[in-house]
Image (cartoon, rainbow, N blue to C red):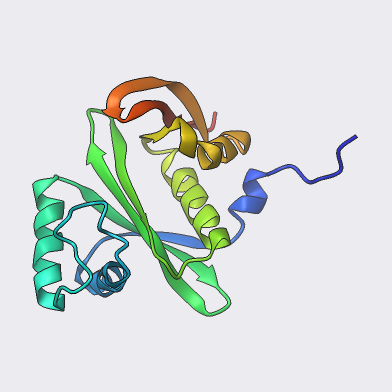
Amino acid sequence: MEFASQPRLNRTTAREVTIEPLDYEHLRYVFAANKKSSLKFLDVKFTSNLEKETFNDLFTHYVRKNQSYVLVVKATTPKGIIPVGLVFLAKQKNSYMVTDFVVFWWASKRNIVEGISSFFRILRDTTVIMFYASIETSRFPNYLKKIGLIRSVGRLHDIIKGPANLYQTRRVK
């Protein structure tokens, strides 16, 4: 008999989370994340010693070049509402593909889990969101599967080193 509580969608997404399109006001958070080298995996040009204006120009160019929609996920904490991270989306025919997640270094693990879970919960009724993850990093997607937000829809090869699992959001019926 197991007494540990099982993950539940309502408990995971109980706190208020807001999702906003990236605008000029959010660039200060992105710049602060870049100072800790959190964006280096996106592009080698994002070095921690960039001046603010130079970084803003480079980041704006990166978003336009990749034709990304960038959303800012904010979570409610005892200190107020703080940004948790960025979600980069590419428009597909009738859906969106998450191309990258950027988690800000100041976000707690709880805020990250709640923020990303709420992101999928809010958007799953209006559109299908897809993403892939390497098999080694599938712990968090497995959690999202347990609470019923996403489902595994296949395996991808030759996108990253080694195979990757493909996931999509589950709509509420």
